[in-house]
Length: 382
Image (tube, rainbow, N blue to C red; front, top):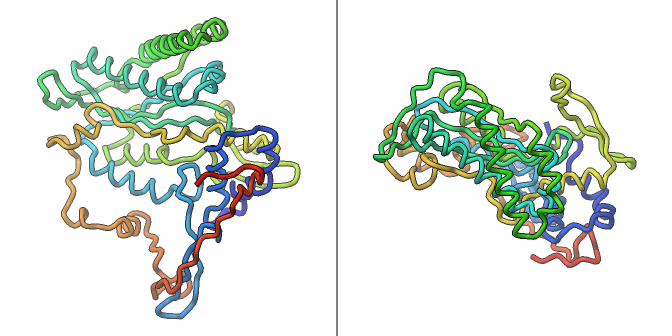
């Protein structure tokens, strides 16, 4: 069912207040502008007519922005389908690298550099443990998330790691792992903490900010860091579909928004400190947008990365551990045919009579405003 309230409505209602209070950068403004215009006449569209019942339908174009709650389902379905074809016929383990809340201040100094460091340290730890424990270079698919359930800043990386690796002789080796976890969790946490803080200190020293944040780093060192590990949940296809739940998520889905009023925005969240109970919280409109914009990733930042035997370079090589081969018929499928197969939804089918198909009879041009509707005094660069 289509949700009653959407993020675009919040931007439309409180966007101007948020701009005045927080003065976001141009990239954030353009992102909010895209989300506000998504599936409206501002982006144009097309008029369709059913070839059976003759009913008309007007459909407006999507913004396609990766932060938009309405534009991710098809991308997610196609991504999961591609990864299932590339999956190895081995066990997969789910590993999550998190950092203490105390480092959020450092993250906000330069989020792009902080997230890159998070990726580098997470893979460095997994790579070194693969060498030391099994004598192989392992692999991983890593996905960055930056939010918690209440929209607070909570950078962490979800990884799926196969129980396989590349030996020094260049041969792919299957790891026979009988235990619950692929690597010792406490050792992972300690090594990750050391690598992450070492990199942060070096970066702060280069920018002459180490003295200012030394106390904060000392506190972060004393706190226990948590690397969450899950045992294998099933075969390769199941674990890839499980990770697919995390790949194309945005900070909040429209279905979680309970109400939008003059006093603010109410939305549901899971309280993991209280047995994951579903609770309702309320924020003012500008504060909601401020928290939401914390999770707008830097320009052209890559949030899904592939390492080791799961990297693009290794995919091109013949792999004896592939769980599934691509058939010729599948290779010839268009994206629309794949979406119908994966989701069961055909956007060309008539929603009225359910038997005919919609044919486009007219293209509707997009409507461009010369100024930013969120902040009229600021010009938008196209």
